[in-house]
Image 1: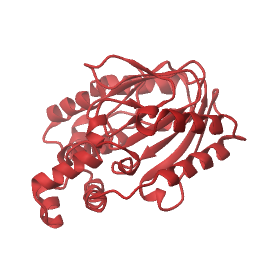
Image 2: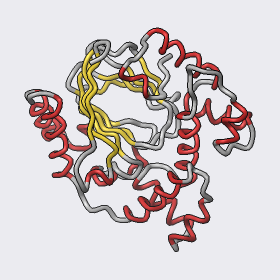
Image 3: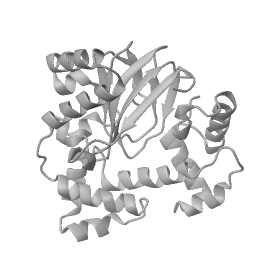
Image 4: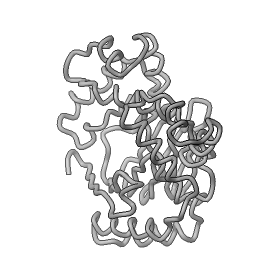
Length: 283
């Protein structure tokens, strides 16, 4: 535990590991009240065990309270996350396609509009899960309980193989692959591929590719040193620095220079913090 925050994570067992990056437990007092989360090629599920979370899914959406937890499909823009003073939750970081087998609705219905966990799994089921988690003997048992719940809810999902393979190619190329090449390799039409992506991921292949390209650029930034924005933009495959700057604002709500200023401030104020490994600015 560092600076009052305990963060424990692990990769789930097969077959969940093909859908999920990790399960995690977070407890304590984060060093910020609000976090601006950049649009990333990933989906998120949180089971909240503390005071309500406050989330705004987009600039044109009002902030809402989420007492039981929330579910967020792959976003297209930055969203604001408000932690309670003392937070306690367990959650799932899904691969872009990984949330679909656990949803009763198309993922596109959740795009930039977080929903409560009750809206996805039902009130009684969520209440039972939260009770079991709240009385568990520590973080590792909590993650085991969450993993068991996910295994029970895992469903066959039409089109998942197609979307998973195409998404994997997008990720492997850092978003540089042409969508036409994906469609041709899969032997389906552009319309069919886009429809399946929106149903299972929430965004089109082109939008997912943009998210991967931006994520690669964001992770390449070292806030502790000087940043060559032109070189960074070129390495990430952007047409020019202006295009990169536009994408940066669209995905983070911040200019590139402001993003680095915020992260440098966090480094100064919270050196060695558990959460510093994430390129997520708290402004």
